[in-house]
Image 1 (cartoon, helix red, strand yellow):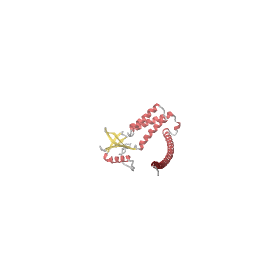
Image 2 (cartoon, rainbow, N blue to C red):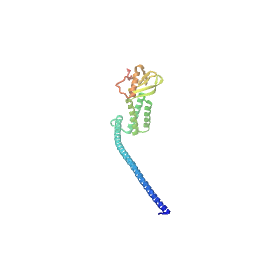
Image 3 (cartoon, rainbow, N blue to C red):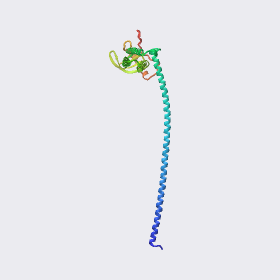
Image 4 (cartoon, rainbow, N blue to C red):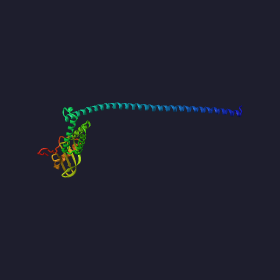
Length: 263
């Protein structure tokens, strides 16, 4: 029969063993949980890495496509620039032929400078007698070039300026434009809508004051026409110009440069 001390010792040993087993089991369970959690974290990381790899591949594909498109556009731009350069050279050659004649290569720099100066003088007088469309600005550009040519001989840059002046003057013959400006009618300045049909005619209309007219090159002033007769046609012409409409024709008064004035 066991003694009380022995019984207590056996009971303590049993509980000690049970405690060790329990602690060991807990440690094992914690370890398994940690392994499971660690495996889950790895799966998440791998998934994120795969997503990022796919995103990077997609971005790289888009970048390669953009680079390919850029190279194609860059090549097209070079071709266009080369064509523009050739056209510019051809334009200058034709203009030199127009200004200096067929044998322009044989003309000296002094002769070229003199010819351009003479052309500028003619152009200045022409603008003074032309329709007053941006007249002050056009005259100022000519005067500036005249000043430069009085101080130096003709150079490529000055020739370029001369070409630009000619191009601008030619443009007035080809463009129909509408403006709002102050004009002088019978010693009175009024704010009117003006429009030009190239260099065929320069017109105005003031619906509030029921005035309409055209610029007379012979008189170098604005000339009134019958408002009731032409008002609707003037407004139609303005609509056509502003909206780039295509019309077969429209009746407008035109001043003939002869004694028989047709309006």
